[in-house]
Amino acid sequence: MSLVIYLDGEFVHEDQAKVSVFDHGYLYGDGIFEGIRAYNGRVFKLKEHIDRLYDSAKAINLTIPINAEEMTEVVLETLRRNNLRDAYIRLVVSRGKGDLGLDPRKCPKASVLCIAAAITLYPKECYEKGLDVITVATRRNIPEALNPKIKSLNYLNNILAKIEATRAGVLEAIMLNQEGYVAECTGDNIFIVKNGRLITPPPHVGILEGITRNCVMELARERGIEVAEQVFARYDVYVADEVFLTGTAAEVIPVVSVDGRNIGSGEPGTMTKRLIEDFHKLTQSSAAGAEIY
Ligand code: PMP
Image 1 (cartoon, rainbow, N blue to C red):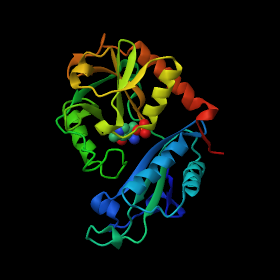
Image 2: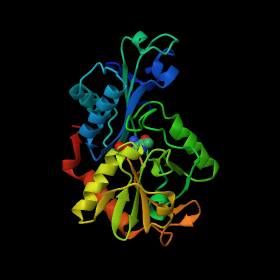
Image 3: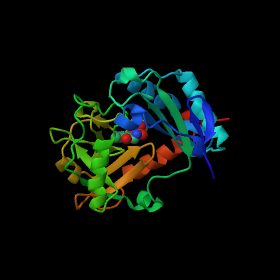
């Protein structure tokens, strides 16, 4: 089945959704994106994703040619045109067509596209059994060079880490920051549980401030769980009672081993399972998103 794609003001079939080879998103990774999900006819945390998109644009000095309300409508209309109620949505804003030099002033207009498709990231058994992950040698970008808060099209840092992970036979990688503290994974944020406390690295460590991360912290607080944004090292992950990852695509997923060390009993932990349940409930609730129809 051919998807209908939004591209610069038009809805076209996927084989007609073409961008220029001179687009600086392609030539230089100059652009930004968002990954969003729709559940049961509602787009989960759409406002938060749109706000982050415009913040990323601001940070790279990119003018998005449509406003936030129009962007919201682009997402909803793309879902409608594809008849999707449960989907993964990709919004991309690239610097647009320029010349072969890297000067963004040569790109008069940013290009906007939206793709909506039905996908899941990890096989179902990973959610039940949990993931094995490793720590990789590739460090997370330092904020002073390319701040991980910017969801930029330049994902090479994460891809290099992903290559290390898949070569080692696991699906995700823990990335450390320049000081050796735990930052995040290639496409997810990380949480550890120790003595009933939920701990996740603070933004200044150099992470994308995940929307799922923020939801999970809120859900945990609602349950009366103590939540801390605190710097921690690889050691703290090894000796944690539970570990899990959060992200729009991955949702909430347990980790059962890190660098060959079993986490806790080597099975998904109780708090993790509760938060997975709470998160699923939230994604299905009418308060959690914008209605598609
Ligand atoms: N970190 C990175 C590097 C990511 O790419 C993602 C996925 N967007 C996340 C964390 C999780 O963020 P979110 O929960 O907003 O999807």
